Length: 433
Image (cartoon, rainbow, N blue to C red; front, side, top):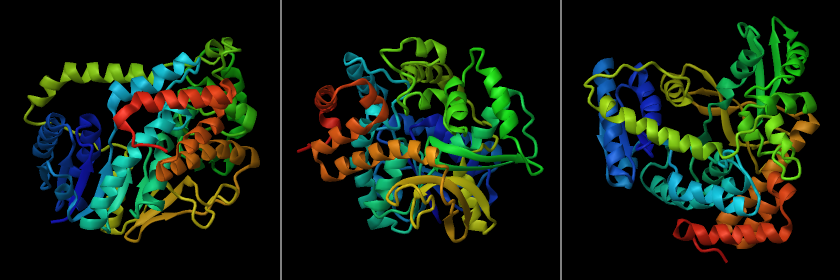
């Protein structure tokens, strides 16, 4: 029996969505679903939910919980990764509260920025252990990474860990819908082309019946910006740089040096920027799960509708050889995006079939969009260098080159902040020289 292994299966809601999709996919019914998580209580809750979906759907997949990670991985053909190292407490709280002491505010802190850097540094050592097991017991497996920071972690697994990895993020699927729904535009029959880096990929082309829709989009966006709404940062970036970006306004507010600024506090109100948004979401999510958990786990049967998450469609395309198109995070091998570094991880359209993940060559991005991407790639690559070499100076370099951090703090403050975060994280990080 072939095996699909889910690492981080205690992420109950996400496991329900992704693996619920697997249970509804006919081409995957001969697979064992192997669940692993260091939180044994939560992974058993995921097992209960999935068995309830299995009973409703009539799936013939086997669902099994493993307490030994290597055994969960043994013989796997597909691996889904959805871990969060350090959780909301203590590590996410640390990522937000210590920078605040320096006057450095964040919204999500899971991609770049000072929070994203340290999320990478505590996650990569865990992935190193995963990779050692994978090379030993399932070296040909496809590793589907959902964990943030997406670009650096996917890059690490491909470049240093020797594991065939694609990074998956739902910001590509939702990009056009978000834009069109906010502006009140009919999105039927729309064709689009999206490429860049994770959380900062660009809607390069958007047409209907061969007609470029961008002039009308920008006209409506300029009007929309006269009122308060939830997507002001992205529309501002589009109006100033020429293209709409995939990930949300709260994310992009901290990827650029223009929006969260101590000397311009009025920008927070003007662009409706939700500071400390991710901690709020964590608290709300924990609270919601505590309220619905007992009721949900008491149900013998649970219905599920297949979601837009890419994982089940990727596995289905490989098993059936029926092609499927995704937006995937892959290495920029051969210069898929010609004016971004070859050693970067990029997000581009990919065709999936029995041959695996086949990225599409994009060529050059518009120069201003490539330049914005490179500001984030600089920090990504130096974070990766820090994690691999265990040299503290590269942590400083990554932080010094982060657009938001560098715009707010002096070099001395950046070094001091990094030292404080290293100390506060303690054993969540390896030792750095």
